[in-house]
Image (tube, rainbow over all chains, first blue to last red; front, side):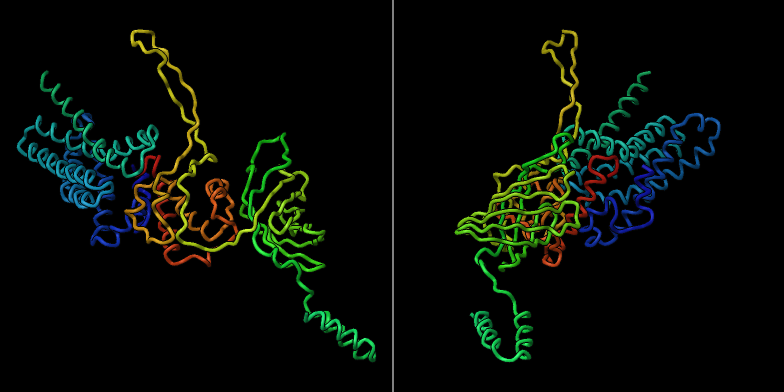
Length: 188
Length: 299
């Protein structure tokens, strides 16, 4: 993921993913700044998220957990999720992938906000549940690309047909896995 | 006629004094020698097929390539032409002898390229050009090729498309893939799985028949759902329409069999229209993206 982000440094209007988005780059105002907001902020969200899952860190250095957590919440709510919503409106693959990415960004915002308000109310169980959901969506950045490699290897689909599939496959199974885990926790 | 008159004049003056003779001789030198068989001028097009191949090594050259032998000038003492095949455009120089309805040519390529050789052919009844080519380098994989060519005129036509009955499968770039198959139909049996390698070829989609990359200004949305092979074919169809001779086998395999395709030049960049130039830039960008991102981890 860092490597994928790295190709957008230094700043260019026409590299990597943007190679096939020149229509949006030229026609949609603010596409480029919003796109770059998403790319540069989301990578830190992903990295921050990994630290938060670590219980040793939480137990031995709760202050670090809180600070990274604030950074995670702030970045998602103000930068990554809104920019994700905006670029989601112009997503590749037409209507079906647009719905997927827009839904994804709204849920991401919602889960993260709920996770934050829960801990402000000292409700740790609820905090944990919503933050896990939030990170499941954050992690879709990885799973989406992972599915792509698998599907291309197996079926050689046309690029945009593929995009419509991975748009959904990237995050729905992640959420289901987390919900299943939470359901089992609840039973214990 | 004009030349004959000159000749007559010089003979006439020959009998005069020596001073005048000298100046007339200079005049005769500077006039062009008479061109003959001008009806044979033009492009002769057809298959350039292997006749002798070094079977002790791996095959790397195509069995047939489309060749265009252009005859530009014939005089009693010299023949000038051009051979255009497999991405090479070479000047031809040599001689011809006529015998009844058959004209026999022996033409040399310049000899400063590793693929140069000698063409030896006959044109029968002004309609069929038959002959062989022998490589200068005797250690070359293919030392001899044969050809039967017909006269064809090249004309750029932006509207020509690839014929739909053609096969557009990239046999030049196979990919090995592993397939695992379960042997038994009964799930209660011991699982017998067989794994084997199979060769997969890229196949083009229908889009290469519907999109004309020379006449319509392509938008991103037109080409977004195309695979790399489609993009490559669409881009190279532009060059094929202009008669570019292709260096790579991957491209030649798609165009050599096309009726309207005649290789005429190894550089057509000055012939491209504005639409074509813009489409080439767009297609190239999508090809690069497909190469970098389609089957890799990046987006």
